[in-house]
Length: 287
Image (cartoon, rainbow, N blue to C red):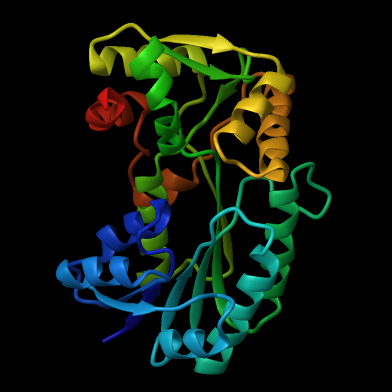
């Protein structure tokens, strides 16, 4: 039986990947840094291991006997160091396949620091000798949940996105593609650009959320400086706030971004629509 390690197992994409793999006959091992989260996973019937990217011994333990691994990291300046360490440990452990979550637009000359860091790791993985699939998802629909306080309190959501239309992706579809890449043939050496099925404006986003929760929600466009201040005030590090503001500036310049067909190609079905997402997460938006 194949042993599959899921890093970030309680995070947005890790948990989605885990849900698609549960009950499919695979030996699943969930990696987390928290003993409390590990205990919760064990209660759900998932074998859990406590490990940290900065602790080589813990990575060795987590990867022992693993055939395939899902690699994801929260946005951090430590991404290159941590993910390269994981790839090295995986290679040493004899892991045959790594599915790595990168980011849309990854490249060495990308305007976003996050995209440049992921490009560095992508190259390292490609040259490692371990089979790989790289997932480059666009912004997650689930990130919209960060607007819940202002939607609940003010009936509004704020961004510097202007009138841009973006093919936001549901993280559940990222998990489904990751699960396929981990367990099916034909995905080795592939780079998948993962988007939602349609580009949508934030006006449409506000409308869909409003319809789902039975309350009018307005989209309020704000200046770039105001957007950055809001992000930093919400706890985002300054470098990441700069990246997110720059991403929306680029989106405004492009106007309407073209969706990729990779989700539908891999899964044989379209990804979740904005309306699907809003209905499924209505309870969360209501607080």
